[in-house]
Length: 381
Picture 1: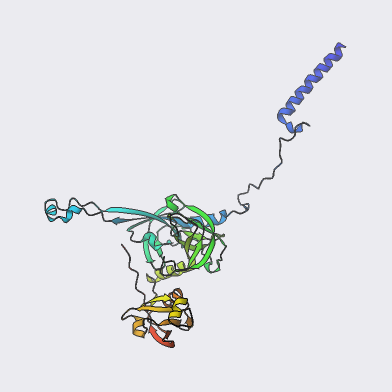
Picture 2: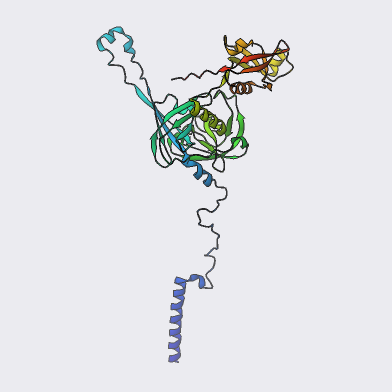
């Protein structure tokens, strides 16, 4: 009996030892081990794996071409009021006049050529006497202004660096409302930032922002510092240059405007080739025809523009156009509103003669007007 008891005790000890080892190393082998291990599915760890709903590929493609722009300019210090006193000036001279100060500002830009050309906004670099560009890869360079076009708020800069990552232009004319849009820039100076939204509207005009307006509207967050940055599509292709926001607080309210890349490219090419943008001009002030105006002028149409003013000695004045005339056609193309008229005239080469059909005293008349060169916009320094 004692022998059997010893055999039982040894067997139990060995069994407990084996059970302890299994419980420590392979607990899943035990029949009562359940509910603590959950079988889950994991995505492939491959970095190139497609991420559902992600636009990281588009962002990685476009971000290297977007730069931060730092500008500074000298501003006169406030004049000491005592300097208006001749007796004070006689004894103390100019020593009490404060020294000029420097004002700094920031914005964004887009490298559009490996040769170092950068697109940004005119208002970003306006009146700046020092411009520094910081690339996404950490490099910095001073930049010079090749030329600007205040009428479209486009400026072209040039930097002298090698191996520059240029943006790929998309087809802005194929953009549709509802397309995904990414805005890339340097808002509030916090560093390069990507925001996402959709294209909210196309062809926005009559906003009073620029002379020539054909904006892409987006709800991708655009804040101060984003100006001049890139608006890209879901493939990372450049479709616009961020230009302005509608805001009462200074921050994004979901209404941002970008200049179409096709227009920015056209302006850039003219600036690089000719040093400036040359547009046609006839020297008139116009007003859109409204139903109320059509009724008061006894017109049978509510499309077109009323000539509100004519510059004395200008092309329109020499061509016989008078205030009160209604402009309905330019070289056979109908004129529906002032924006359309402005775009048609600006697209004509100075020196060419254009046929303008007007309505005067209920009678249609065709006048020949020699197109002039649009004067450059005055800059406020």
